[in-house]
Picture 1 (tube, helix red, strand yellow):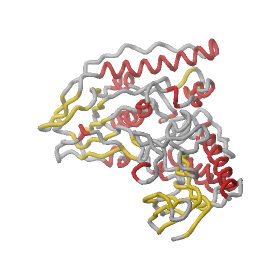
Picture 2 (cartoon, rainbow, N blue to C red; picture 1 turned 45 degrees about the vertical axis):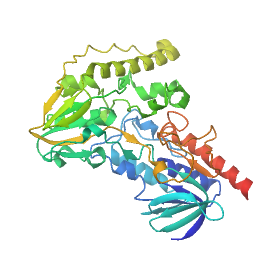
Picture 3 (spheres, helix red, strand yellow; picture 1 turned 180 degrees about the vertical axis):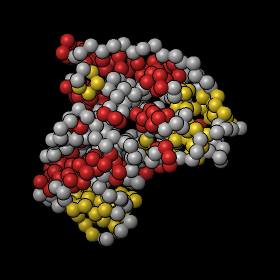
Picture 4 (tube, rainbow, N blue to C red; picture 1 turned 180 degrees about the horizontal axis):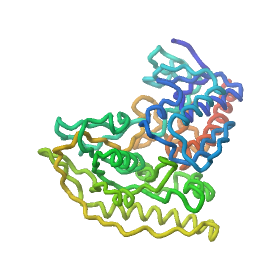
Length: 404
């Protein structure tokens, strides 16, 4: 390839496309480099995946949702179609171009080392997703060779797994969805549970996300978290499947799914689990109580009544014989990976980029967009990424003017 652009945008997901459309509107010369295809991360979700937030959150700048069911949940392919259509208003997108390294260019600006050769740029906006790297806990080592172990990016549907029961490790949003799907398919899953928030799918006629948006929840800054590690907490247990319904530990227990504590290790064909299921349920209950207090305190009687959660039976086994199991699906979350290929000093100890309120990094001309909690709770979400993208575009234009 071996060329130069005023600005390189890395990634053609919701963040990269929104930044590109903003740059195009501002008349900024740029190119988008995408290693796979537009909306690749959405395309790679499992077959039955649906949008977990309500349809109205398909609300990128210039393309608000205009369908008939704003509180519903569209399937995966409709999300892809929305983003592909949105890409029509973006700048030049080069698909099939993988960025392997990013660092300083000789002389000035930046150099992206790509699968098609070097590309130099005055500025770079990294938009490679909220959490690009699946996390595999150390305790997941040691499964017998007879059991197939895969992370969620390799899961497609129950029929694609080897015959037998399935152990799902991780109980955030993805874990509970797969546990339900596998149960319905007759695969008798076991769900290894950790700490994850939950909430009712709907309150009255509106989705929980709609209520939370009304009280500014998704605009809360990073400083509201109790610790930096809270940035890695699991996503809320919820599903948009079949029109959306409650999906959390109590629902799964009522369905008959076997719930256990977090995975401690595997030895001699037996998986061992901590006796902490009750504590994990209590954690989720506390997070819902926090959210309910926020809603009730802000909305008062305008918020319909919400019943208290039912009692929970935490009588979980601590050992499971893996005989008869065909697969383990690990859904233990994702981690940032930017620091593994961006050779510039802009990351904290966990690998998240450090930015100011204007989203500028310590390296002038280097920007990030679409990172989980980059600036607010909504920074990586369809409903919030547009605000951050607008700020990044303004910063790019300012920097270009100063360095011209």
